[in-house]
Image 1 (tube, rainbow, N blue to C red):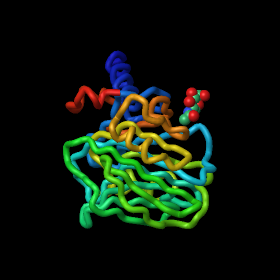
Image 2 (cartoon, helix red, strand yellow):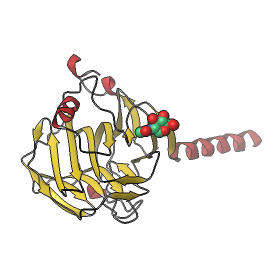
Image 3 (cartoon, rainbow, N blue to C red):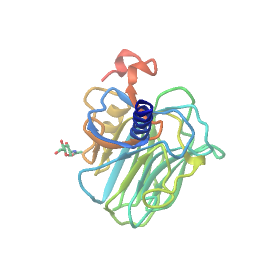
Length: 242
Ligand SMILES: *[C@@H]1O[C@H](CO)[C@@H](O)[C@H](O)[C@H]1NC(C)=O
């Protein structure tokens, strides 16, 4: 009886350990985060070293999906002032990418979104001009004005694979992402076209994020989301290797 109870205790402990979010600092070079299930309890949070005081920003990432939800969200940055301070979603009805700056929305048309292939994306915004631009697989959008011309400020909560409807939470199933996300970098400036091109070509020496750096990343991972080796989840050619 005693043995049985300690066995049960062990199982419960393991169960708890598995369901606890895991916080870690790692180099995720050559790695992806797998989101295997359409659910709001699978998420990843990225923890920057400092709170934000940036008058411009660029977010770059790659994703590979089989779209299962209506409007899957790739990246969501919330601050106490704006629950959608910088976010990136795909809108499946209108077939547009939506970028949100300081909780104001802007849509971009005609950029590629495809199941079962890697897609590289960068999005830029500058408080001086108030202009946003998106780049998807080396195609540039036009520039569009969005949001009040103020800096990003305060302590952000940054999530991958879920859309924050409020600061630090409020996830919706219809915004959950399924697939792989990799190479997430956040820069405190607008990258040049040349820098973005280098990132799109996945060359060795693209510019790493000075605010969020995939190669030195503090993150928390929860639910069934997990870190895997890129070469073990999809085919990719030599020139893509970094
Ligand atoms: C954050 O701090 C760590 C530890 O000091 C450092 O290694 C890392 O490069 C910093 N990250 C960024 C993006 O500056």
